[in-house]
Image 1: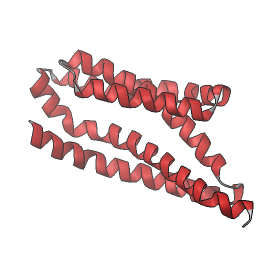
Image 2: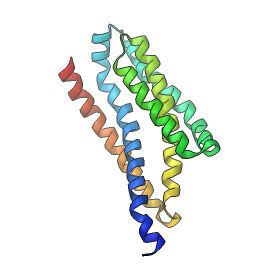
Image 3: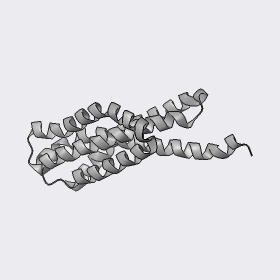
Image 4: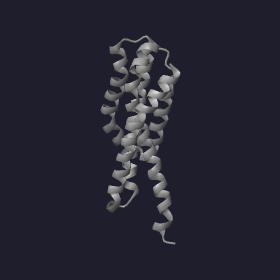
Length: 165
């Protein structure tokens, strides 16, 4: 068995895992829009404060995504991937347990820090996992995972919000 054939399943499994990360970041972002009315109602927030739940994430993520790529290049993509994933998941849990909108805004900003680290390292790992002639496959898989996350996020968030509030 050639070396290329024996590592192929491992590479595809890794690409699948990275796609799950892309899916998670996208569904996390898109889910929040449908939750704003419940956030206002459940946490006693006004519209402007509830909007900051989304703004905090988007601002922090946008500012840090390039820095996250630099950190991934400097300290290792795998290390930054797992660090970002840990921060992302932990901050998401904090957000779910938020007693007030201010705490939720802080949790969303922390989630964005993890998301920026997670996202930057995922892209670097994904595009270096396959030979250059197959980079189109990587792009297609990642864009598909992102699109699926964008679609699933609001549906799941709307369902959960309806069931829990």
